[in-house]
Amino acid sequence: MRKIIFLCFCALLASCSSDEGLQDIGTNGKELANMINDYELVLKGYSIDELKKEKDELTPTTQEETVAEPWLIKAIQDSIAQIQFSYNNHTRTDAGAYTRAAPLEGVFKYETCGRYREFVYHMDCEDGGDTYSTGNIGATRVDGNGNVEFHFCVIPAGYATGGVLAFYLPNLYAQNMHVVKRHHDNEDHNNKNHIIDNAGLASFGPNYFNNNTGFFWLFGGGTRSDKLPFKFGVIGTAPLPGPHNILWIDDENGKNANQAIRWSESNNAKGVDLPAEKSFYGLTPGRNTIYEIIQI
Image (cartoon, rainbow, N blue to C red):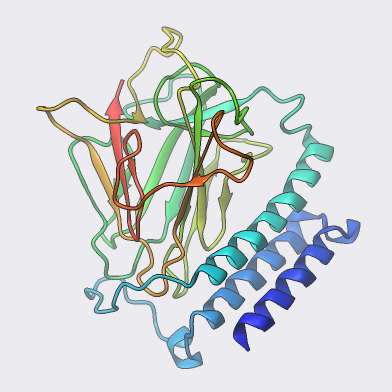
């Protein structure tokens, strides 16, 4: 029954997103995103008492790690796609996103971003979980409650090699280029995800930042440039032996709906799922997420 209800809801959402009256991302778009988050919690089986329980980020979690059913993962992704469709239509019309705006990318900040703007995002990880970092991951940090505060320098596309965050829709079929969407199923209970500094971006491209997080990482899209006179980081794999800078993220334990999809010139428009627990150029997906960061 819950599956039928949610699929009907997704059909309603698809209908609503095509309504010009619901294109205002500042109001109705956020309301639709909140509705999706609420339905996700219901489908995961949380009781009213559990949802009302006070947030506790310090007590080590005892919740067993479980994986969401395939139909639920698909339904969540389909509903997110509708929100993105609505958002992108709005930003294309009002801000010229993807067309007139110069393509921008995010690299991990270390000491400074120089003359470039900084994008800062707070990710609410599993309450009482095991999120941690090792080595030097720059300005990005794991706070005292086991959450992650990401710091990215927003730079013109093509200035850096390695895994960069794409704030535009890359050419999915360019030679030697890979795009990976990493969907983070973040903490379900009283989620506190939020953007701290949007770097003045008119559009986040295909990325999304709601109660869950969608990062679109671009690999192989640029060449190292001397135009960046400061240290920065990208996703990649450091040679052995040697130090490794690791960000290990404890994503949601209950019915985890993490997903990692890769696009390249050799696969179709739907992309292919990345295998769990295997590194792809420094990104290791699974029930949790590992990012290896190389300092440039």
